[in-house]
Each structure stands twice: as C-alpha cells, then as structure tokens.
Image (cartoon, rainbow, N blue to C red; front, side):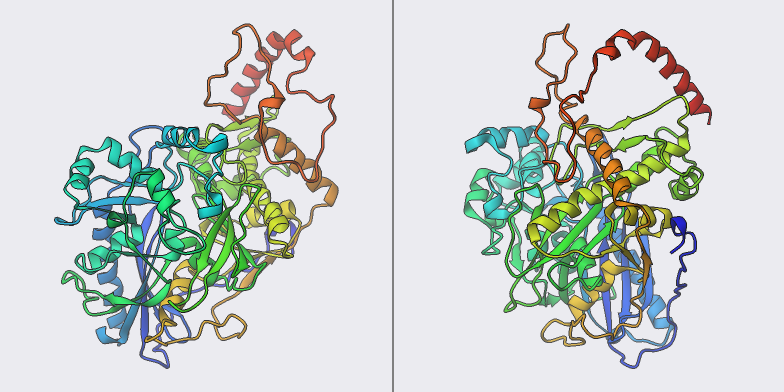
Length: 588
C-alpha cells in the first residue's frame, strides 16, 4: 500500500449489457438523504444492469432545520422507475422478467400524511433535523434521573432529536393540518419506506420493517412491536403507525396504475445502513462496516442477542430475514456530519471550490499542522450525545492555511469513526480486525488511508457499485415465495464484490498523540449552545461540569488546564496576532 493510497487500483465498472443466465430480475427503490433511485439486478449474479437517480432538494428554513418535499420523493421515484425499466427493455428483457422489488431508505426521516387524500400534511422532517431539542429537554425532565438513556433498556436508543417519535410529536404540536387530521383520525405516520409503499399500493399497505421501526424510539427491541410505555410517553397511538413486519417476505403487490411496476411483488425492506451491512457481507458477529456519506454510519453485527450500550452507542436491528427467522442485532454509532463538513467548506466559508476537491487540497500538506476540526454543527451523536455542542476549529497559527483546514476536516471523519469503533470493540466483546467501507466519500483515497492510520486496522473499501441497493436486492430475492437466491456470504458466488485494502502506516505513539488531542478538542465543544450560569466577570471553564466518555487510553496531567494564567496576561497581543494570521489564511 503506497503512501496516502495514491496507487490504489480502481476497478472500472459499467453496466453488464449481456443477458443473465436467468431471466428473473429484482428491482430496488433507494431513497437516501439527497436523491432517490431505482436499480435493476440480475439473479443469481446480482449484477446491476440498469439504474437511474434524481436529486431531491433539501429545504432549510431555519438553522438546524432540514426538510424535503414528500411528493418530490414519490414523483422522482416514479420517473426513475420508468427510465430504468426502459433501459431494461432495451437489453431484451420484458416487464414480467422483473419478479419483485425491495425498498431501502434514509432512516428516521419522518412523514405524516392524510389517509383519505394520500397527501402529505407537512414536508418530510429529515433525520438530522434538530428542531425537537426543546422536546428532548421536556421529555428528559419528566423521567427518573433525568437521563437521556432512561428508555434504552426498552428500545436501545437515547432520547434525541434524531428519532421519529419526537419529530411526530413536534408535528402534532405545531402543525394545524396535522392536528386536524389527528382529531379526525385520518393521520398516518411513518418513515420513508412506509410512505413509498403506501403510494405503491394506493394506501393498501401501511407497513414498515423491524430495521426502520427499531430507529423510531417507539419499538421494543426485544418484542419487535410498538411499546405501550413509549407510546404513552409521546402521546401517540398505534392506529397512526405502520404495522411492523420482517425485512424479507412478500408483503403484497404494486397496485398503483402510474407505474410500469404494476403487479410486481414487494418482498424486501431495509433501512439503508442495515442494507449496506448485508451488502458488505457483514453477517457474522464482530464484522463491522462504515458508510461514508453526508453522515457516517458504523454498524457492527452482534448476533441474535441485543447488546444495550452503556457508552453511547445505539442498539438496532440489523435484519430479520423472514417472519419465522430470528432477528440479528447490531451496535451502531452515527456521525451527524461527515460529507456535510466538506460541503460547508465549499458553500459557507468557500475555501474549497468543490467538495470533491478535498482530497487534492488535503494532499498538498503532509499534516494538519496541529489543526483540529470538530464539525458539531448540529450537536454530537454517538458516543457523546451532546445536542448542545457546536463546531470548533482549534490549533490555528499564523502559518495555518486552507489546506490544513481541509485535511483536518477529513481527519475529523476518521476520528469520529474511531470514537465509535473503540466502544464497539469493548461492548460487543468481539475482535474487530478490519473495517469495511463504502459510500460516496470512500472514493477518496486519502480519506481511506487516514482512516486506516487513525484506527490502526486495515480498511477494506468495497468496489461494488452500490452496497445499499445490493443488500436489499438480495434481501428481496431470498424471501420465501420468491426464492431467487439463498443469502450466504460464506460462498464466493458474487463475482462483483471486490475490495481495495488500505493498511495502517502510522505508529501506535502517533495514533495515541493525535487521538488524545482530538478528544481535548471535542470536550471544548460541549454545552456551547447553552448560556452558562456564571457571573459576567468570570472567564473560567469548570471541567467538573463536563460529562463525557471516559478516555480509555489517554490521560492528561492535572496541571493541564483549559485556560492558563498566562493566557489572560497576553490576551491582547494574541488577538492581534490571530487577526493577522486569519487574514493570511483567507488569502491562501
């Protein structure tokens, strides 16, 4: 492996235009944070022969608020289906060769709609929206111990703006159309998978699967059903929620006349990160993957018994491959801001011409120059769960340039991944000796090399065109009654699964030093959005007020302080120097 991964061999992949040995095809609807797509796969090879995607714009009316037009998701989905089916027909296939479809979706994004008209009652509230922060405070204030983890034994999740229970509650309390629909008992709620299937079946099916339901803060992680205690906490009813089903079974058929999928079976549903876990063949306990996109999503298979994390991770359902099959669980850590960091550097502070130029910019300097970037734009997720944290760039000198900041942005993604991976190793009690990687940011060779150097284990980047769609395609194809494949990652049947390997090149001492500084930077972001209750003349930070994950490997001497005495003495001089250095930075 060469330095910074510069000689990684990409495997070129185009659509395979030749007919499969089997005429049976599987389709996949994939709605992610920024787009919706429809792909078609052959069986049993699972080669993608057709695909089309369209962007779904993000709407942000207030800082930290993120919405999407729910009808735009559906309209773009139908357009993608028609284009992909036309491509399929041009290769000699027929409509009835498409046997079944699966659905995978951005999780936690929440939609409420009118059961009578089928129209959304409000824009979809996207998973990373933080408008419900005050609801979190109100909920936590009413539970014993005032802990965000109070319900973890039931659902595996902390109380956080991340999850649909709070989004639904906010919509009920703040949107008159939702209030009216609830009063008239015609309000339906669900994540994007439920919304898509409702439309495909003309309202005939209001369902979700266990992977998506496990992300709502409303499902009992053991019984896999809506939990009465949690429903009471958020004043919700089962009537408005979808029925929970397994991830792989024949749910019904497409009945919407608007699409050429009419009559096609629907047999697979997975949240996008669980689909990626399957697509990476992480079916054994201890196997872990990270998807690098707008956020990062790190999942580790823990087998058939849920492990309730005590260190800030989420307990989630990885998949349930049939009504009679046991559920497989995973520990998960979510990084709210990964690719968004690069987009911020492009669009807000304008030190990157394009987000995809980050690799070239970061490669122009050998290190970050001791600059650390904590992109807590909307708080911090696992393992900290600090909703009031805010972003920080620290370590700037008059010699710092935009290239150091861009490299620090890439390293922030790697450090946040290590935060999660260390706790997974401890709590799963499984040896994690490699990290599987996918997602659009994983194309960045430098990022992958920095990741290997940060965590100290090899990174295996999938060269599969789309791990998420591939995973749900297998899930839909293996459903009882479809039987187009047997999902078995122990066999080497899938010839389109290849990996690029990035070996760590850093030393243990270097990793320890850099990670220690990262943790110091992270702690400085805590509570930034909260007005401190201190006297105006005081300028101190009380470390006793900071609650954080214990440092496993890194300790600091008690003589180390956030503000030393000399800082106050030389403050005016340093401000002048900082202003001069900042001016030089913006010129570079």
